[in-house]
Image (cartoon, rainbow, N blue to C red):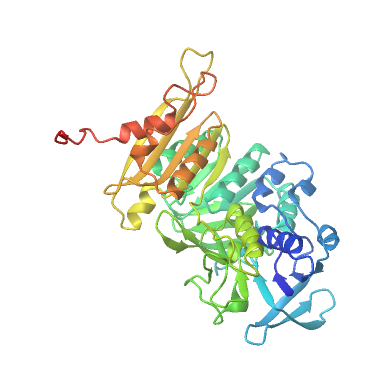
Length: 454
């Protein structure tokens, strides 16, 4: 079996390693346009902020490790054409310019995503950087050392983590986003408001509800960001606007979402049986809505990549879908979420209720105790749990993984009230805070039933 893999980050590495282990006789060739593989891009802010001293720790594989598995890795090779009808591909060596053709029996598309770069006046100037891969992170660190004023455009996870890292390194930081609040895709306002206050308390300037219109500069280098509401002087700009899937190679050959994300079935197959896809290039089954959605997360990517290998020869293990579970630490706050926010559910036209719990996570008779803020969103009619968010100075984020399992298994908020959780004063109260949220969500009046006569 001849297997071609295009792209080698999270999903690609998982697919390659597992394919090599499961099918030792397979001939596996990997095409990667970068000069490195398996970089954990979610660690960029930690690297930029100096928390991670050795960036090699952010790589979890290498061409040498893949070679030891019998895999041929063609670094700095960009695939420029795929013909799925003929099962051929054409690649260009980015060092020599030489082009080559190859054939495959099975094709694995793990081409990932790329930052969205808007077509704005001045975008080509020096000092406007992207944040996605290892080379980007090195450039950001190098450029940041030379300047004082840094502007980050985009208040998603990466943008918020970067402004924190820059501020902690003593920089004058501005965060711009077109939305009225940060992290709006992940958290409801009850959570984003205190995080915004924390950022401002640390001296970060928030320019929210402002859309970037253009960039101005001197001598070819950016000095100013011009928005719909004003101007922000700066020495460096980092674009963190979002990502779009890298799927041009298969455009018109397999089914895709409007944004270009490849549609796959439960076994990671595209609409062509011998073409598989995984990771940020894909749309995935989102359990809270039952629809396909584009949710580029490393956790989704490694699961999907592993399943590609498991299902490459026959349909063996179906993908269970995702809740889009994620977490972030901003200064002292530990934050996590899973499934739909209340705002996102409303945008889907879903009729929901929610319960908000603010309590101490363990008994007040203990020497210390921290407050926990928990919100659970559920369907009004079925009472099925659709999402949850948590925040605390104490790291209680693993509780969101528990709620993720509840959503996965279509549990109700009433069942959440009575799940068996242990009690130990070091860790929680007799009613775990997840139980307590469920109890608060119980109907005010229990249903009255006629007695049964036997």
